[in-house]
Image 1 (spheres, rainbow, N blue to C red):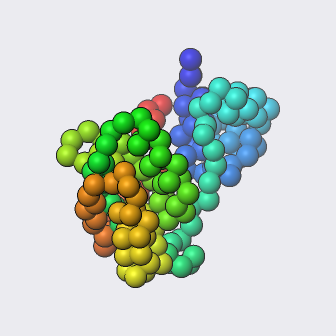
Image 2 (image 1 turned 90 degrees about the vertical axis):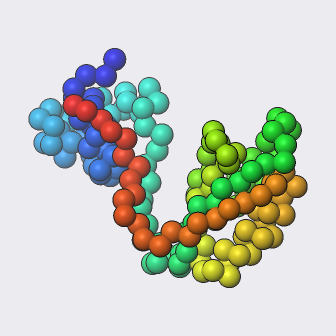
Length: 153
């Protein structure tokens, strides 16, 4: 069971994944040793999947991001696993989620430019034998983007 201090640690970690126990303790009014113990316990219990740096896309050569809605030809477990294996090998695919509704999957992709997006879509995604159709939407502007889950303390 998570208490208020655990929730404060998780909330602050979402803002600053690089924070250590001393700074954490100062921020949530606990000793560094208590924070260290709690932080280790939260990691061990699986409350934290990992820590990542958030990069500036333009600074690393990513000039185009898009969402791609896919409809699959088959929903068999074999087809799903084959597509999963294929999609895991594509570095440009940042996210892949199964959906309810009209489309079966949604991909979030990042590429260098329109030509590389066209190459990815035409030759690597639509060429997959499991894919029936794809509809894409290019992201024009990032209004809000976060990985932070809503935590109420």
